[in-house]
Image (cartoon, rainbow, N blue to C red; front, side, top):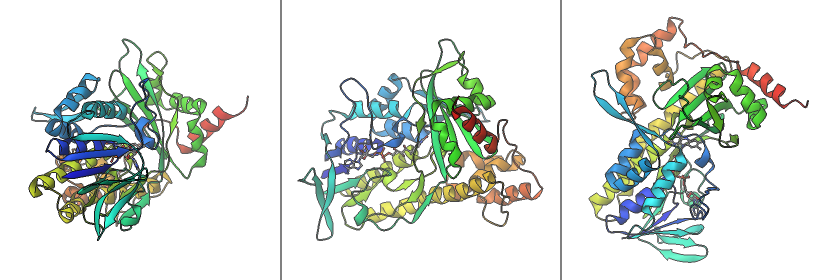
Length: 436
Ligand SMILES: Cc1cc2nc3c(=O)[nH]c(=O)nc-3n(C[C@H](O)[C@H](O)[C@H](O)COP(=O)(O)OP(=O)(O)OC[C@H]3O[C@@H](n4cnc5c(N)ncnc54)[C@H](O)[C@@H]3O)c2cc1C
């Protein structure tokens, strides 16, 4: 089967190599030609490439199952596997400490030259459709025929926009990223950690996270509500560093005696929760971020992309050719959409609480509030593991939702972490940016 893939991001590269290894003739097209000869990789058009990422275990598992050399290359590039130890002493895979860039470089480097896979630089202008069926791509004006077209063009891909139904779920998360990468100085120990992957603090009206990556590199992330425009000033180094000094956990991590910045401050754009059904023409399949995107600080995008890619491969194997697209869509409806729905609920609740509102105890509780209530009611805890590991979806928390509701009805609320509240943070930004 001739396969044309739009996009050589993680989804396109992974699927391209896995399909080529099954004997299919694959061409993956991306306007980005990969790292420059001097090794730099601007990755224009993929805003998140340099932003903070946490990597869940599904990503490593997908590589080990299909392209184990890419996993080895990733580890050789410094990525550090994490093992969680369960209460019964068993260890389970807990994700990777790695920058997104390190992961994508290792994957790209491994699949470049893969027999049966051609990585082609070019802009996909449109999907060629004849008699209701996708029959290839137009790339930089020239036709490229295919038996199966895969749209792995990511969260901002437009090529198949006119061929898709309206997204079933679409909503602004209401938050934006401001982050910066640092490196621990030789011999310095990491700062405080909430779990083996990250340190997280929930403050009054915003959130901060430190993602520990490979080789002592870490990202400091401030998640700011977009409607508080004063906080957009955090993109300026003086304001970002002043905020880091004022938030105790960040002050510990970014102490000049412990670490030094290795990138400028990076400000992200709009972040959308979106779930997209499949496009109309037969022979065209959407996968990865083209299907769903969720609030990124929960670190699900690479995992959901790999889960989808593996399901698609299973359907290709089953059919011995183009997969049953309706079956893939049905699987996504059941397995992917609940994550997006839960993020929509979570974001609405977080924004409401950040604005000083009260938790609506008559509405369904988002997963994040059920998780928080486990601090108070240990009976909730056994339900959390499968959800946190994305082995079960948000619906798996339904059995403990009433217990969580009872916790909140008792008047309990999660303790906020130490640091300036949102109003004080705005004042810090203003002060840091005031002309001297
Ligand atoms: C700020 C932010 C932080 C995130 N943090 C995390 C995290 O912590 N953990 C996590 O797991 N996930 C995270 N994600 C999500 C993760 O980055 C995505 O899930 C992942 O990039 C999806 O990969 P993809 O290959 O589907 O799409 P992409 O990586 O977007 O790749 C799509 C590719 O298609 C190409 N393309 C598009 N249109 C065309 C065209 N017409 N012609 C040619 N090429 C085209 C683009 O150039 C691009 O290379 C985050 C996302 C954001 C926005």
